[in-house]
Length: 139
Image (cartoon, rainbow, N blue to C red):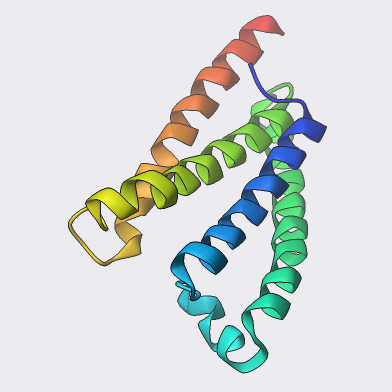
């Protein structure tokens, strides 16, 4: 009940570039305050193309470390694949929000993006708990 690692990484990479293209072509400006000053100073194209590989590598290391920890502490088989799939769910939910919900409904009643954190994380947590339970039963 999870994506194979290579497929999950491919989908995640495509979602990162899709998010970049939405920012670039639809919004026309960087909305993330973390990257805004870099975009103003160096330009959108350069920063966008440099950030994607850095994000990809950062998430790869984070998932590998978290999966190692989950495997050691919780003894969950296939924890790396479960975490990869949860990450894909989070990014797919976010891109779905950007593409379909934001233009029609705005910022869900607020301009604060932190309100989205539960909306993004809850489906991934539900998935991870169900997948973990099934993986342990299969074991």
